Image (cartoon, rainbow, N blue to C red; front, side, top):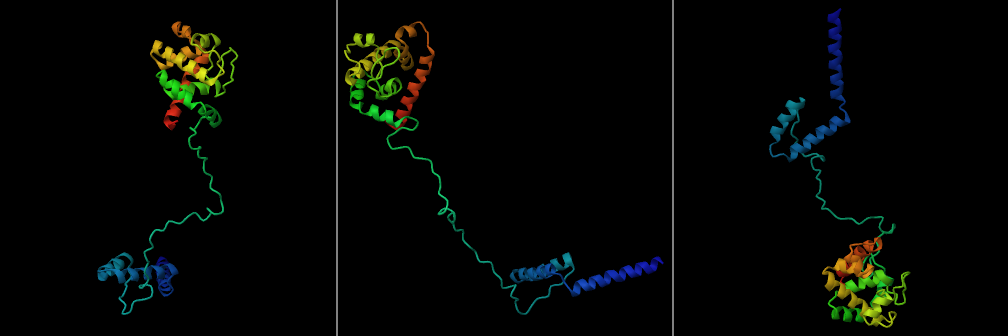
Length: 240
């Protein structure tokens, strides 16, 4: 019984292989044609046929005429950079470019107001051995370039001079830009010579020299000093 079953199984396998050989699949046909195409381009076609035979048991005979498959070539296509096809349809968002001459991060309106006093700032800064951008930064923070500014403590004008301080340095009207900038730069220069450091001079300018002497730093002044130095740094970087 077992012998009959084995004979039937062998017969079925043989018949299936025969059918497979008679009706090769599309994949087999493609693989066969691909192998022939490789042989046509190979410098050692006989070696390649032996490799195929040992690997698959299939013999690939040479052809007298090349097949259309053998003649297929893949042309070299150089890389061509194509523009975005949606570029014409979808607007590209680009960040706004800061206006020329207006340092980024600072108010253009305030800088415009301050710029009208540039001749005075340069003249009195040079007279008192100060950097003009340091004076501009003080005016930016103190009054935002408003010549008529008055603080809650009574400081007046562009550089916010207290009436007593203005009187001591010879300023009769702090609302006159020339007098205010003259007095403010002179006062700042005095503090810088006294304390030898810009940050301590700004401390004294904002809170009074006695505050520096007693080492009492008000919160307002603690914020004021780095703010002035930050604005000066921006102005320096932008070449203002």
